[in-house]
Image: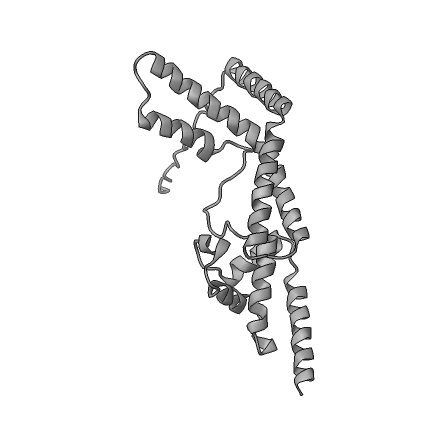
Length: 223
């Protein structure tokens, strides 16, 4: 007799929660009307203007990480982000306050746990297609800060063959923690630095090649 084969149990598929089309339609209506109101008041543009003025002042008064053109290019990305998400998030915050006000009007205020659950659901869990959240590592890095850091550490290399991503990352980690660098949560590695440079359209090979050329010129002049 052939040994009986054990049958594999099929894992039951989880039922997807069904959404109420009326609720979805109402939510879409509220968000559309809210977005129209925000746009009519020019609120987002005013927020961006205030934020830009403050960021530019900090850029000029603190460590100048790159040129003004680099700053403006990086800020345009921030402006696009704010214009896309601020109206939606303002609407969601308003809805949370409205729900809390409704509870308070009954004489039974919401518990801290209720508020935490709502905030977590709206701003942390993120549904499909929404902006994903990262683990928070190296959030400070942008194009002009990376260019500034490279400008600080590359001249410290005295041997051309020593210039690589890993050693450059170590030297960046050793920079004095002033300005934005105080917010750096985790030390850079060569692999992380490579990804950051790629994400911010910085050609590492070009940066290294240009520094090697300058280093060779300095050695020629010192002879």
